[in-house]
Length: 357
Image (cartoon, rainbow, N blue to C red; front, side, top):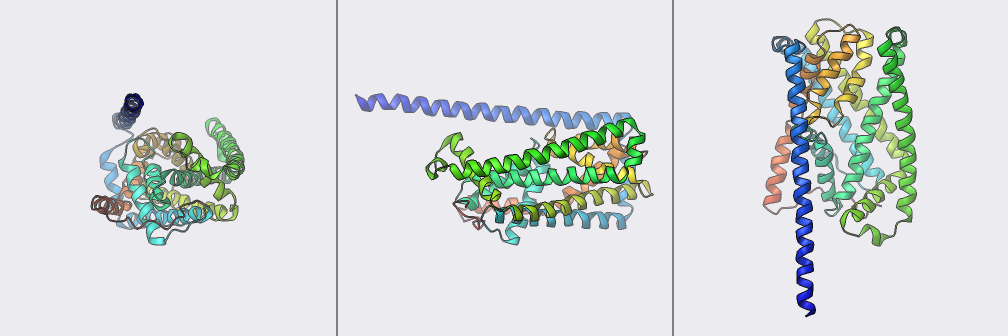
């Protein structure tokens, strides 16, 4: 009798779990469809309004010198992102070899352009890192989350510093004056929330028993993410190093966008335009479309117009094309990794601690 009573309950549990997975899958498909529609709609609007003109885009590639400089800055960005990831992993108590960190970074960068949802880069990085934590993706989520937050923090700092350097111009234009206030408030608020969150996660993680981190389900994932954050909270110096690398990475992206602007317009952009590039990159990082496509172009066009520079959408799209080209080795790494996984071979990414301590 008892055996017969267990079977239906187990079947019901499996059916509920499968139902939840199907609903989550449908939600992801719907979200991806909406974000693709946003990207297509914004690009169509920019083309129809004349803000995005395909013949103008060819000017950049007619200047190989500007393309070469911009590509060097894009590659430099990926190198600095690799160093940032290595610092965060060290802060979590692990070690990541340079070659492995570079593969993770380039693969995640390529996935960020390819996967709809706006967070393809973070999901890919968390998944790859998770294989180094004995297959525990939740610890990879903690590292990838900090990686994303340090990137956003660096962009906000660069945005505020750039606007402070051109404060007179910012204060003369009401819209830019309001934008400056928003950027300062966002930077201060983000810094406070990041600091409080890191301290709280450290305290919570220290109080957690090991058996909680071994739990299954959503609760276990949350506990293990907190455990990963708690480990990094105990090493603020390494997080500081990661933030420095993050500043260098974002400065490289800003530099690449400025070089592209020079190549397309044939003249050096004014200081106000340069100061607004990090603001456009913050908007581009929002998970509203795949890789920020369309959103970044629309925001850049509006910001540059306020600074007296035409062609913001074209500059953003040209920069995006160079960034995608720079991340193409990630496609090869992804194919190679998938092939090794299908063949049942180890991924050779296991340089991270299983305990996250």
